[in-house]
Amino acid sequence: MPSLKDIKKRINSVKNTQQITKAMKMVSAAKLRKAQEAVVANRPYAEKMQEVLSSLALRVTDSQHPLLQQREKERALIVLLTADRGLCGGFNNNISKAVEKFIAANPQEYKEIDLMIIGRKGNEYLKRRPGLNIVKVYENITGDINYQTALLLSEEIIALFADEEKYDVVHLVYNHFKSVISQVITFSQLLPVAPREVEEDTHITDYIFEPSAEDILKDILRKNVEVQIFKALLESSAAELGARMSSMDSATKNASEMIGKLTLAYNRARQAAITTELMEIISGAESIK
Image (cartoon, rainbow, N blue to C red; front, side):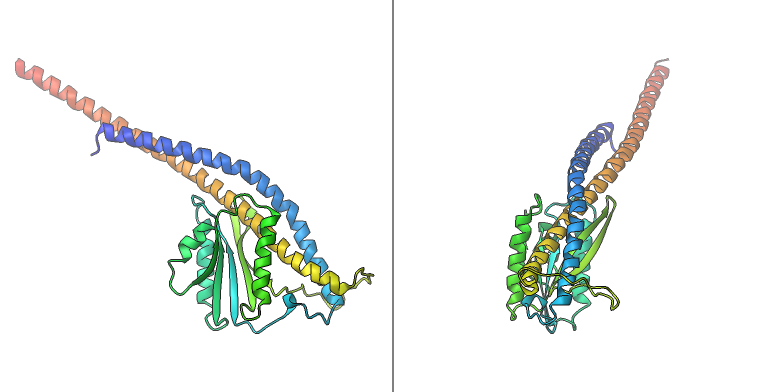
């Protein structure tokens, strides 16, 4: 049975841990509010971008733009978004396992699958897995999300896809922010750009384009890749903060329960020690008589 001193030291240790988890929860909650506002503000723009792209694709049927080329899918690049820090529950492991499972389930569809990982935790998990080819890792770029980051990433990914000897398809994998306690692992095809299918009876409004619809389509295709990457970065950041806030809240509650149990054990041990001392005093007094 542990001594009173050992129990007291453990209680103090758990209390210190509880203070840390409580502070981390409050910090995540403060950051989450800002991240959630950014996600909500960006979603309509990203959705509208897809609508405009689909509308243009209906009018430009003979476009040979490289970002629209549908090739035989032999070589794939998976762009995975994870976090740089832990202490956020299963946020990083769940999405890393999902990618690992996706690669294992598609050995025949793709002859070659490479990984571009954004976030230190995803790299730490997947680099230990045999048979996975990680070609690029970016760390410490998800702390402060800005459009310039998405722009630079999109330029690199577009260049890799435009080189037909590199990749035939690019998939983007990230955690979609649904709520503080819910994140949805999302797989989306980033390249080639696949415009949304429009039903046959959909009315197509006739517009006059200046410059031509082909020129606008070229610009908007690249812009769409930028916007979708920026959207994924914002979603992943908000989902990470929500997961960390929820995880730290659970850790704080668990610490309170542990402190209660340890305090009870301490009181029982202290009572037993006092009883033992009283019995020794009484026994000593009886022996003197």
